[in-house]
Length: 212
Ligand code: AMP
Image (cartoon, rainbow, N blue to C red):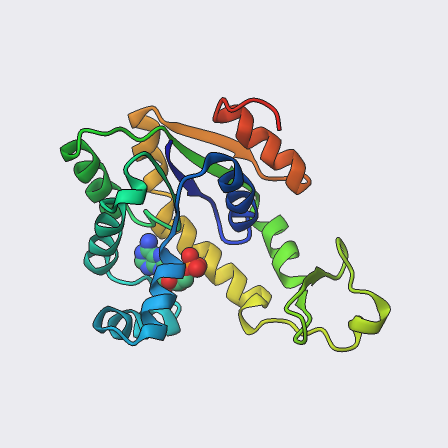
């Protein structure tokens, strides 16, 4: 299965990716994770990417495209992969499409997890982390236990302003890939509102993988 996971920040892509990967046995290729690893390793690409990431900007297309095309050419991705966080722009989608055509393979599905902006803002601004264990809570949906409540913190980029900014960027830069995949006939829309189990179930249905 060759698939792409798309959705606004806070739509639950990470949660759903983890659940599906268990079942699919394909590599999870997250450009955010790869770029953070390159920054930590101090590679030339990491140094270039770091400036953009710190500024909350997208890393230039040529850097990210080269990185992903090399990664999907590796042996473990020969039978399939799940791309997460890529493509994030239309030129990235076109470059991926060209590479897959040259390799004579097809994309099976682009799953779009849909959640309204206001709901995402509520999810993200209510998020709190326990700095001692890294556990994530939500002030309304999953409140921390009493002994943890006093020490939970809010991540700097989980404020309403930062969240609206990330959503605006998603709408202006990433949503243009949606009509591209709609025309290719592989776009599958999934309602991202509900419990994680409900959303996983919907994903399995659109991917025609049957129930858990
Ligand atoms: P993420 O963990 O997916 O939110 O990515 C973290 C950061 O990495 C983003 O804010 C971008 O700066 C960069 N990044 C990740 N994926 C891409 C991509 N496909 N194109 C450009 N920049 C990316």
